[in-house]
Length: 80
View 1 (cartoon, rainbow, N blue to C red):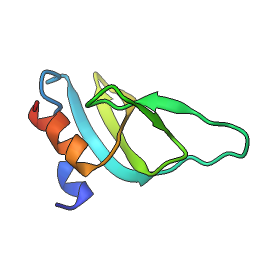
View 2 (view 1 turned 90 degrees about the vertical axis):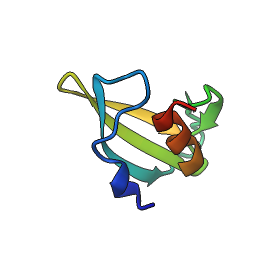
View 3 (view 1 turned 180 degrees about the horizontal axis):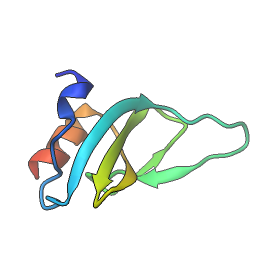
């Protein structure tokens, strides 16, 4: 599935949130190891590793979420 096909979907249990876009992401800054939680599993994702950035519209605000990979994204959106 193309990442653009996820636009318009909502994470299970968050009908107030709509996916605006999904993009491959990797944040690399020398000496700076930023870590975020995976929206699906809660595990920590070092943003210097490849992952997916999900931009949601939540009540008119743009919110960034991070997931490890496309299978995690699919499971998060399907509530698995």
